[in-house]
Image 1 (cartoon, rainbow, N blue to C red):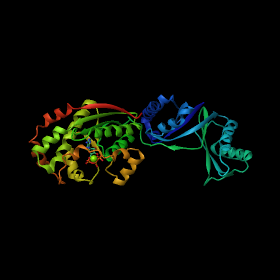
Image 2 (spheres, rainbow, N blue to C red):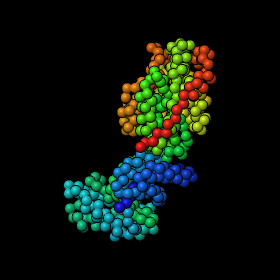
Image 3 (cartoon, rainbow, N blue to C red):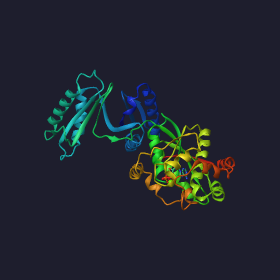
Image 4 (cartoon, rainbow, N blue to C red):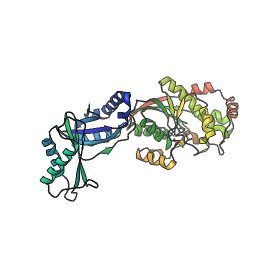
Length: 388
Ligand code: ATP
Ligand code: MG
């Protein structure tokens, strides 16, 4: 027996001439998501239909409802374009409804205008039929216990009862490719997820200070990538040691500027890596005003270390909103595990909150920037992290 899942997508249908490209990308992303489950994806009119073995139905629903671009999914029963056959299937569903849930309605969407009955006629005809076979049912349009949805397509009709919400957004890959600066914290995975939601394929970059930070801190970055990969199939994770950089800064520059200087080095490394891997923008979990490094002045001075575009998807969110999103996408539990981030190793007591670029440049004159960048890049390790 085959399970059939009807996939709805919203925004992409509105995108005019890009529509074809978007639908193709969504179809290919869905295919990637379900192919190991024996799932196949077909295009219907303004919908996609995923078909797969019944025993994998729960997984197929789970994965399709975590694919960006998907607005909602439903397990459907399929029948020929024949009102009598539609009635039989609707009756099957109605017969499974428990006796304390008797208020119902029928809701039809007809894409196929050649079908001889319009939506209202189908609603009425089915409503009357269901009451004729189960007289205790009552029609309630405003507040039903259950709804029987009908979609009249071009080849088939689909009948279903429930919708599972998808994440919405745009299919991964349609807007470009970017590099997520992924710490072990709460914010950056959420920022990455939001960038993915807007159609960006991600690679991730994590900076560590091994042996000052434990291996477990790096594994945390891997675990976070695995969580993000649930929404993006696989994610390439790059890891670079900034231990020498932190030591050099610590020995040669004022403590209050050390975080700013380290951040600028991170941006330089991220830029080099992006060039090598053809990535168009950096994504960070920065938001305004949480800590000294996130005042407007700090963000500005740090971002002047790169000419790349830096996207900061969290800038409009409060901390509680970020945390709630982290819980929803299942990164939060991993983020709060107590393994040290590299920045805490040489953390100054009083970091500067309003750094000045001329001071930064003066301090950087004490460092051999190019040599430090090369030395750090030589520590690069890259892993491909899959969701499963
Ligand atoms: P997060 O919760 O993501 O760690 P945060 O609130 O701790 O962020 P900061 O420490 O100021 O804020 O870091 C701001 C951003 O800089 C992070 O969201 C991340 O994008 C980047 N970043 C910081 N530390 C690292 C790191 N060790 N590796 C990669 N990126 C980092
Ligand atoms: Mg952090």
